[in-house]
Image 1 (cartoon, rainbow, N blue to C red):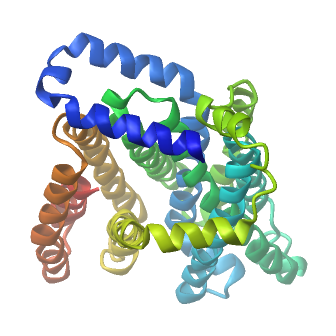
Image 2: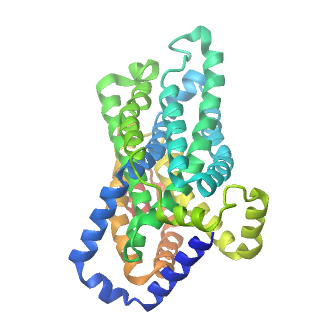
Image 3: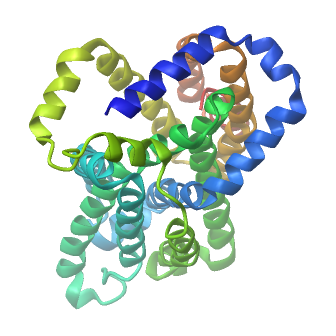
Length: 373
């Protein structure tokens, strides 16, 4: 803990004494540091991308999931989707404790293993149109794997974020953290493109019976590569320093640690939690829920291409936001993003409700919400 506090103090002093304009003026140095950071952390980023990929796949095949496991109930399928989010806080607490007490590396490997199992297993479950006699078993296992996905994903993002911040130079912290958003947008763009191609190639009947399983099963390959890479990364110097400076680190009482966090940093925690809630709503509602609920009359392939457009726009904007953060600071970037979302979010939604044509879908979801992401 002492080492972590010392790093925060040193980083804060560096940030205060650094002229962001002069630091980022040397673009070659900034680019070099960013590329070095990517070479060091690619297994973390690839595994984190798989977390978001699964969320995207499930939402894009919500209709097939509903028909196979929920007797055609769209509400039931979305409630199944919600199971993952209910489990996420618990996973964040459990794997966060593991990350603090036993290392970031162990925590990120456990979370990735859980996500791989949960994602691939969902593609193997018996459903109404394949193994119909065991549909009830398939439904029960689906809920179990959705919960496992939530537990794993909840711990994944916290441990990965801690690792990225601890190994990144202070001058590229903004770009380092934005890699999580880049991973999510890459995952969702790939998921929507893959399913758009599958829908066009296989047709609705084949997708309903077995085609929806392909994206889940596909995740086994990049998942294995990410696990191989994560087993080769080193533990962060910050954690190793904490262990050396605190012999009782692993025996520290969990409840005491949480209470210290709540007592000493309540405002910071509140701002962070509310900020994440807003960001998560913008991540999930426009490209997933609105496509199904507001633009449901569009052909499946059209809706998926709209989702792809949204993610590609976000993918283009996010590195700019990371650079902007490194140049002008977190507060300015957060303020600009919040102002844009406030001014554009509701009008864009109204535009989709009033005119839900394909062109409006590309403009509202693809462009306006893509920039907000």
